[in-house]
Image (cartoon, rainbow, N blue to C red; front, side):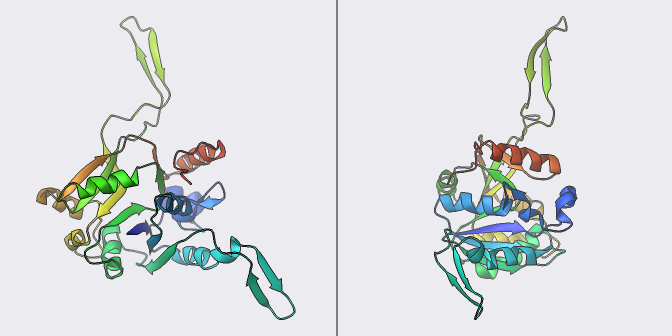
Length: 257
């Protein structure tokens, strides 16, 4: 079963990093966030990936092209320029790096990689800029339990600010460091999709999150798998710093390997 990763956006809200590298290559603990996502899927036995490239996609290509050498022990013979890899890569990954264009929306990117999908086989889909501890086996089981074309993980995002509760006299009775936003569920970005769902995408200008999902909703083909565990996107430097801190604590909820 293939996993599709959307990794082509400009990442303008985290421009501190994306002026030189694409957003999925922003490191957490010295490794690109894209690597963290792939390691998570791999821990569930999903090792074939289609990465939708766009802005500075060559950086991602170079990372994986040189991955074997950078993550293995080597013998370099300077006399003749030969290189011997002494052990194999620790990752059993097969990766399709597909250039889907710079100025293409998420739906358009999916439309462009459709030829690389198996016609009647569901695939995982997520974004290259967020981590979570979604139970992928349960998500897949849920998807197979209904007849819809798409299962979408929903989450209640954490609030940005602390909150307080007080009684009628103004005395504070509780302080909440990170309350759950306004309680409304949002798209958590972890999908299982049947390829036929991509027929709702007209072209490059279409966002997967708009017309296609809206049309699938009207058809009764979009189902909600609610995730109540950890979830964090990396939209801003503040988000990045939070993820770095969690990783450094050795208690990262998404580290399942």
